[in-house]
Image (tube, rainbow, N blue to C red):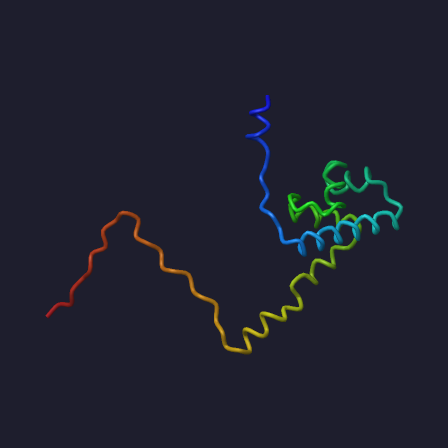
Length: 123
């Protein structure tokens, strides 16, 4: 049984402390929004199609919870308009654009085992 738990557990990549704090703040804001509306955790979880435990993880800012779950909770709380604000003020992107720096293009795909024949020009 212990081996199964080790195999089934998910490993989440570590986040920078600043990002963890931001996620915690988002969770706190969502919890406060729920409490201001006087919605129980059971009602919000049911309307979002998640369990109360998952809602608790959202309200704690757990990074392992899918972004779509955060969006569904925001929808239940009628805060989905705030999603449009994500990345809206892309200060770094505008600076890069103004500097004329272009992002690197992807490398061309490799031929997968097939021989590529070159056609020589006819005389």
